[in-house]
Length: 115
Image 1 (cartoon, rainbow, N blue to C red):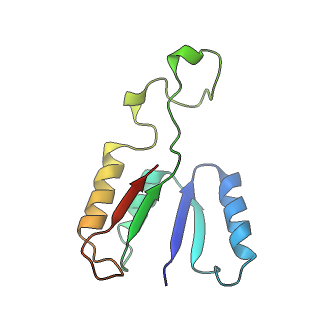
Image 2 (spheres, rainbow, N blue to C red):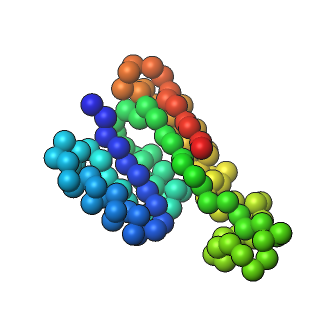
Image 3 (tube, rainbow, N blue to C red):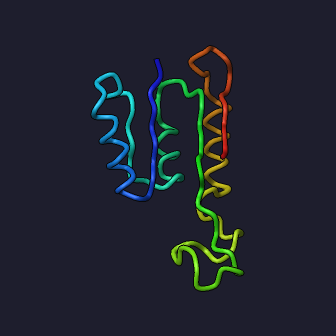
């Protein structure tokens, strides 16, 4: 009895995910993917009126290593301190959301998994 929301900055990934969801009627209206940054998505979720039991961040983009000059994704920051995806603000929003939330299993708070 849970809803699932995913976000990505790549519209092709969002469209692919929503396409997979549309093939299974059990998931329609319960699973959705949106084109937003992690910070924007969490800001939207802060106003969600229902319980939130779990927040997961999968495979955050790493920064471009200095040793890989000429290689890798040129759109990534050049150093880790820039805070490309997981920023202090994002972690604060997650903390606020889970600490002030009564999850659907009746337990105060929720889980945060970072992979």
